[in-house]
Image 1 (cartoon, rainbow, N blue to C red):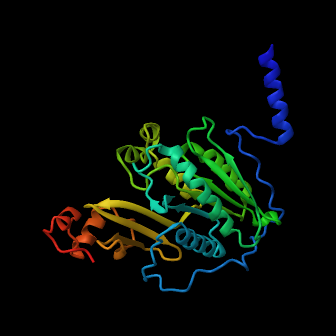
Image 2: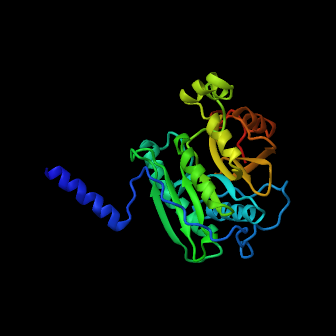
Image 3: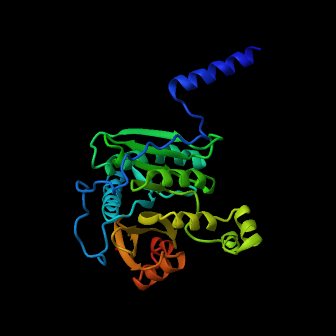
Length: 308
C-alpha cells in the first residue's frame, strides 16, 4: 500500500514540474511559420579556397569556433540537417572516442554533453540568450543519449542537437526532424562507425539478410536512414593512431574534401594530404609514407629521421 502511495506521489510531482521520463521525447514546439528561418545574422566562415587546408583545432575553444562557423554557414545555405563529429575534451586536451575512456559511453557522454550545449549556444546567432534544455533519451540511463534544445525568443529560430544518438534513437530523430521543419537539427557524435564491418556489409543487403546484419550489430541501416532524412556532413574531426603517429582527419564545410594532419615530433599538427573520400587507415599510412614520415618507433630509436 505504501508503494502505491509513493508511486502516485511521484506521478503527481512529475505532472506538476513537467518532468518527462527519459524514454519519452518532449514535443517540439511549432515553428509558427512554414517559411525558412531567418539567417541574415548568421556568422560566416572566413573566406578561403575550398582546396586550402584549414587549421586543425588545437583545443576545445578552437574546435567550437571552427565547428559553429561551418554549421552556421551550411545552415545559411539551406542545410538544415547536419551530422557533426567532435573530439572530446579532457584535462585540456582533445581526445578521440576510443579506449582512452575507461568509463565507456557514459564517461564520454558526461564529457561531450557540455560541449554540445556550448555548440548549440554558439549556433544560436539569431538569439543571443536562448533557453537551453537537455532531455535524456536513454531509458536505461546508461546509454548516454540526450537531446539539447535551444529555445529562442522566436520559435522559428530554435535549434535541436542529438548528443551521441544510437541506432535505437532513429524514431526520436524522425519525430524531431518532422516537427522541426526548416529549423536546424544536428546529430553530434552518433554511436556508430563511419566505416563498415562485416555486419554492416550484410546489413546493406535487401530483405532478411539485411535485417539479420543490422540485428547483429550492423549500423548501415541507421547511416542510410540518417542520409535519407537529409543529414549531411558539415564538420567532422576524428583522431587515430597510424604507425604510432597521432593523426587527425577533418572535413569542414564548405569544403567537400577530407584533410589529414599528423602531429610531428615537436607536437605540432602538420598537413599531410587530402582526398575526396573519407580516408581509411591505409590512406593515411600511404600519405605518411609519401611525406617520408617513418613509424614513430623507428624515429624514437634513432633509425629514421625526425618528423618536423
